[in-house]
Length: 199
Image (cartoon, rainbow, N blue to C red; front, side, top):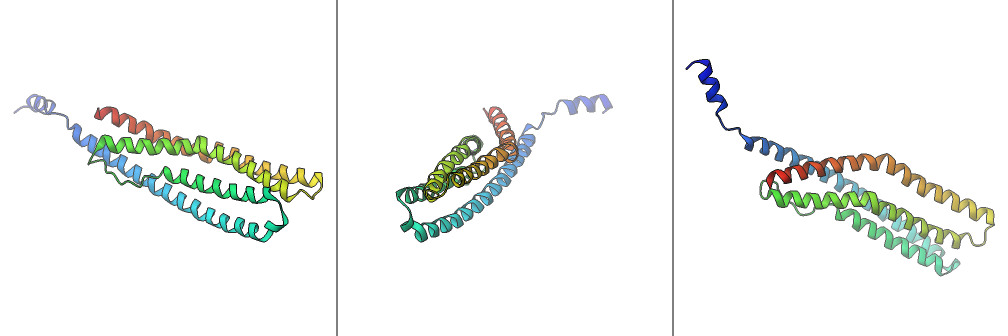
C-alpha cells in the first residue's frame, strides 16, 4: 500500500465525535463539582456567621427589651426573619440532588442551568433587595435606640451605618460579584452550547 492509499484510508475513517463529547462531559462534570463544592463552603460559612449574628442580636434583645418600645422588638424580629429568608435563598442555589451527566445529559444540564440561573439571580437581585431591607430594619432599630440622643448623634449614626451598608454593597457588586457573574455566565454559555449539541 503506497502513501496515497494510506492517506485516503485514514481520511475515510469516521471522526470519533463520541470521544470529544465524552471529554467535554467529563470537563463539564468536574467544573460543576468544583463550583458546587465552593458554593457549599460559602453557604456553610454564611450559615455559621448568621448563627453568631442570631446569638448576638438575641442577647441584645433580651438584655435591653424593657428599655425600648415596640419598634425595638419589631426591628429585631424582622431582622431574624430577613436573615432566615436570605439563608434559604442562598441554599436554594445549591444542588442537593446528585445527578450525573452520563446518566441523563439533557436532565443534568437543565438542572444545572436552573441552579446557575438562581445563583445569578441571588447575586444580581436578591443581594441588593437584602441590603435595602437590612438598611431599613437597622434604621428602624437605630431610630428607636437613639431616640433620647441629640439630632447630631442620630444623624451621625444613620450616616455611618448607611455609608457602611451601601458602600460594602457597591464595592462587592463591582469587584467580587462581577467575577462571580463572569464565571456563572461562562458556565451557562457552555451548558447552553452542549444542550444545543444534544438536541
